Amino acid sequence: MSVVHELSPGWLLDHLAFINKISYELHQHHEPCCSKSRPTSSVHLDSLHMDSVSSFGASATFVPSTSKPENDDRGNCEMFIQKYVFRSELFDISKPYITSANHKECQESKEKEDLVNDVKKEIFISINGKKRKRCVAFNQGELDAMEYHRKIRGLILDGSSQLIQEGLTSGFLHSCSEKLNKCSEPITLPLDTCNLSELCEMAKHLPFLNETELQTLQLMEDDTSVTEQDLFSRIVENTSSFTKIITLMGQKYLLPPKSSFLLSDISCMHPLLNCKKTYDVIVIDPPWQNKSVKRSNRYSYLSPLQIKQIPVPKLAAPSCLVVTWVTNRQKHLRFVKEELYPSWSVEVVAEWHWVKITSSGEFVFPLDSPHKKPYEGLILGRVREKAALLLRNADVKELPIPDHKLIVSVPCTLHSHKPPLAEVLKDYIKPEGECLELFARNLQPGWTSWGNEVLKFQHMDYFVALKSKS
Image (tube, rainbow, N blue to C red; front, top):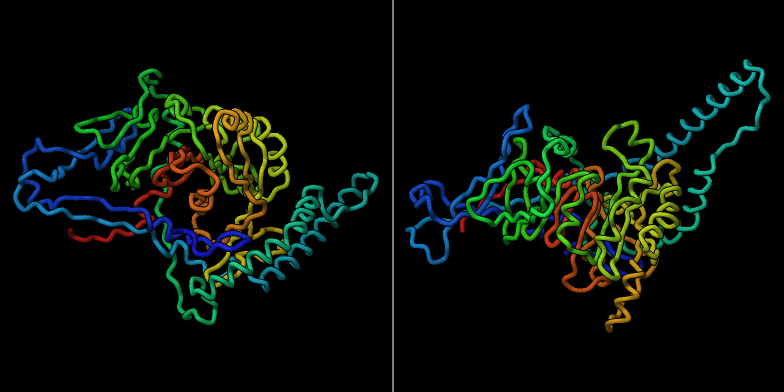
């Protein structure tokens, strides 16, 4: 369970526990014994290998590994189960990113910088002989952000305090005085040698398969080989109850059981639509445009017009719950509420907040920091046109979604690794409902994930392998 505590303000989540609860187990036979087995025995597809070559035309092939059926008499061939757990140090946030003292220094530094900039502006105006204008301390966007923060500050502080106190009492969170004074080793992250978004861009130049022939590719099929066209134009499913490994351009990625994904960008979403499947919950984490993204060139962003073109109405089932992650920019919040959701016939029903804390219960940023806030928003809405039709034709009871709920958790150090929503949303969607995440960077059992970096956080280097014999 990712939910550690549930109180009236919201939930305290354990993101790491949610990942490690997933059965990341790779079933392998003991190599010396299995090498004696007949080559014609049944197979499971454990990995997709794509040659890392300069030409993108090399074929990708599934390399089967033998597995022993229950009634197969092959001697004493032993099964090894290799288990993987997510690297716990990637959630080791013991100190705030900015402490109160540093925050004060940052404020003083910014005030000095603003003063210098104001002087430069006045000199520029004087030299050019233009009429001096009254200096404005804040632009309209900043004023809107301050007003928004003023409105929700109380509920963020009070609600988080209750959940944090519960976490400290239960021992899930630990006060700073209880932590040992030891230097943590620097975290080494995997090299981005397989740029998934670039692969998606290159895949556009591959010949497309006939849309009528596009089918979901299940990794349980026997004796199958596929090409790049198959990978980039089909939804890939791991229907088994154990983990698969997919190797793409020399990089290995773990596929959790009962998960499916489509690796593509926004221009190649037709495989999702061709499956004729609709979803009861759609979680969206758009690549919002902002100054930080522009400076870092960390990932490509989409314009509001491009985001509106996402075919949510075609993917949504009746009464579908749509959840969109939103930054604290009021421009983005207004866009989702006033333009995006209306264009999809989605009615806004609630606004929730993700509050990021350290393992000792402190906000990762000072609550009143003018630069970075320790919270982000989620806008929840219902597809109402289809919902009205459904309610007229069936006895459907829809649980109302409360407003301003808090999701409090220790964040991952990996950028944009959002906390899981499956358990906090389960009361508001039908049991066994179909779930879809758009712009995903990781996979979940029972979910379909789409994006041009959909396997990013499934990279083998983010996990630690533990071997055990069964």
